[in-house]
Image (cartoon, helix red, strand yellow):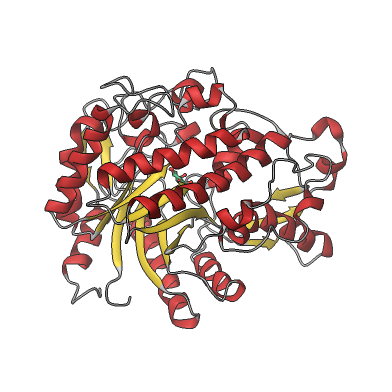
Length: 452
Ligand code: BGC
């Protein structure tokens, strides 16, 4: 990896903090959603999680001993603005202030994500991301956080995975707020991007020299077979999952075929003149979360049968391919997909900004605080793929963040899947570094400059 390459680990507020009712924090859509029967596989919530709201010093110690250059964490909007806008809760900001101070004291660079899915419930009650006001409130919130932390934080990530916030939250209903709407989900996706653009503007106005990016989850969509129908299905999946976000964020219009894809679902009337200029303002970096490739097959019956049609059905089924190893969650393990993602970005966008892999990781279902050889193999394989991509294509790859520092609340799957370099015993909060943590630590300590 090049000099200056940033090695890091990542977490998100609702997944680790707990303390959901402490020091004036308002409710978020995840507090509400997790109370819905059946919403979370094991019936749990982020109410306590890793208790990082109290144990953050332990987390910082773990990061320091690991030897990473950077920590990516998120700020919980409802801690800072309990109603989403209006009155600022100083006590909520104090928590991040202390965390940022502790990181800076240890020479660990904070990468702050402003939105990792925990929308204040009050804003959802007023329409959530379906309505443009939420985007405006998000920009104001960004300015508030930058006003408090921006003297020490340079690196900002506006949104984490707007695809998941909009499509999984508002169309599939598997995530908060648990809606199953077609038009509403597309409006949410667009307004998330408008909010991103507004936040970029607000951050630049608040802090000269801020480095600003957005994190997208990108997966190459490959046809399950060579048939024309599967190739067309893969293209539709690529439009929905990847290019709906990469094109406008990187200064293009929405991709060709976008309106046709959603014909009958939405007239896209939420778009306004000037939105694309706002959304496509130049960025300092693009964050890429890569977990797996999608093998896309045409699913005509689902598309044509109104009874089986979800709020959002583009006629694509994701299939498993024989011979491809999978994680405990059934996710295909294909490091080459990271290579394809990075080189594909470079090919499609000649003006691609620098890239960070802001998430990549593997879950295990067993509750094992020790040996995790599959995690070591996963990281090594994906780092090699990323390095190959940077050598083969004009990708300015600046860093890699493992997801996650800690086992944590894995959204609708609850606490079963464990992604951590560090095991968490939830009843006691005890943190135990796994073999993968020691493996990474040894490699980071053996660096000459920024090389392994
Ligand atoms: C999210 C994380 C999540 C991880 C593993 C990403 O989509 O940003 O919050 O835990 O994937 O599922």
